[in-house]
Amino acid sequence: MKQRQLMNTIERTFERAQDENLGISKHFIRMSVLNGTLPSVRAGKKRLINWEHFINFINTPQYNSAEETQDGKIRPVSERSLANTHNL
Image 1: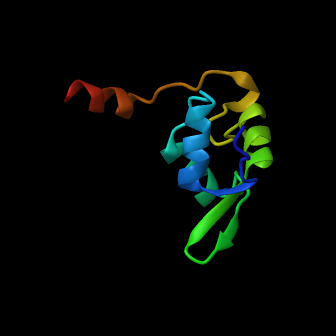
Image 2 (image 1 turned 120 degrees about the vertical axis):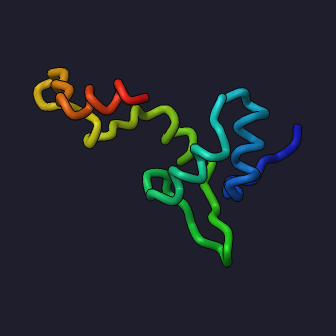
């Protein structure tokens, strides 16, 4: 069995995720690294991702508090938003 590296570039992390049928896109990995939700180490121009941290990251639910509504309620749609959809 081929020994895998613990630290990989975004490209190699994506390829390994594909090999293991994780269903994660390269764009998702890249954006998670850039916004800081997925820890990485800078090595020159590249970012290195620890595979164990990556697995923990995808197994932990990620919540975007900006999209959550107060008290779990559905927020009302404004009249202005409705008017804009009729012009499409």
